[in-house]
Image 1 (spheres, rainbow, N blue to C red):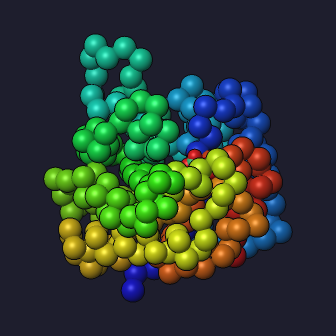
Image 2 (spheres, rainbow, N blue to C red):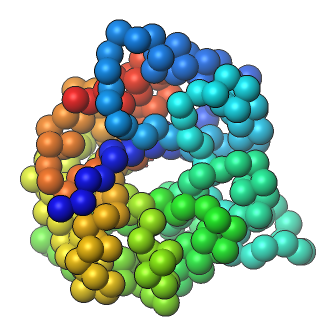
Image 3 (cartoon, rainbow, N blue to C red):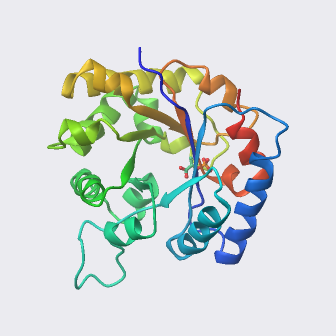
Length: 258
Ligand code: PEP
């Protein structure tokens, strides 16, 4: 079985201006490198608002911080007359590693369909960015017990036509919508059920080896107090953290889940 390095990614959403962002990253630096804990091989990333990325880049590069960063969205287009859009090319130029695609808030408030999500995943790879492909079911679907079928439909549509060389590095984030920002965390068993089903689907679409190598994160009200139990599940390889990633101490504690 492949060894997968856990990934803890902080999705700041539309929070923190560039000064506040700088402050938070400086505090993370202090707490991630204070030498009091061996947090082992855990990759840590932050996804700030677009307007913060340059400041975050400068800090991380200047101080060689052990942090990666990325964006919360990108355009399906490379450049041109698309007012207000941000190209993956610009994000790559800013040194972004990751870009979130298909977050439920984008799907809900910006009408992003599975087809748009698929196009954005491909656009990310065009520019050398690694997508964090978000999927997850709403409460009604969960109550009807249809979460696995629903999420696997999103996975198939999102990965449609994506070559194996690209799919091999994708990060998938399972985020049940009813657990995002609600304080209502999925049980570790709920998370494992869907994450395992996603891995099996990826194995069917590509290969067992490829599926074994990709990281599948859980997201939805992850906190320092619940992260260890979720991370103990076999198919959960990290977390996409919203609210709790805005607090340096709390996010650091999440990153040191072991
Ligand atoms: C998210 O925004 O992806 C998220 C999981 O938010 P929260 O941790 O606040 O539920």
